[in-house]
Amino acid sequence: MAGGWARDGAVQDQIDGTVEDGIEEVRKRLSAHTGPSLEFCEECDAEIPAARREAVPGVRFCIECQSAQDKRQTRHSAYNRRGSKDSQLR
Image 1 (cartoon, rainbow, N blue to C red):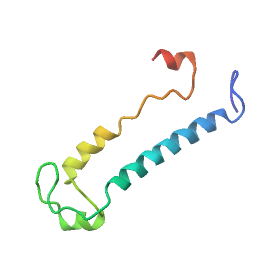
Image 2 (cartoon, rainbow, N blue to C red):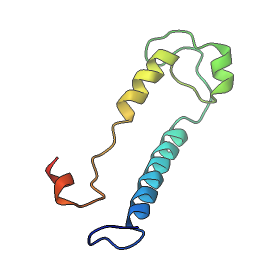
Image 3 (cartoon, rainbow, N blue to C red):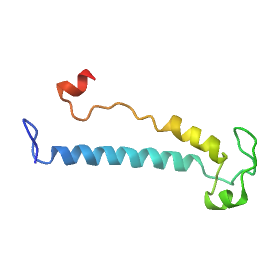
């Protein structure tokens, strides 16, 4: 149920669009990491354990560097799906 001037189903459309954008971003990152796993971290040269190389095909970073990489990549664009005046002022 939408409120105000929004049509019925508008909120669900916003949710679906956000989920689709997230899935697309993850697919882009997955396709960028194809190929053989590295034995040593691309960033800090620390050894990547065999268990991690087996669990994550195409792994390029140790856990610490991967965590830092993920934090940098999870910044989403502030795309305003709502279009309301309040959300535009933030």
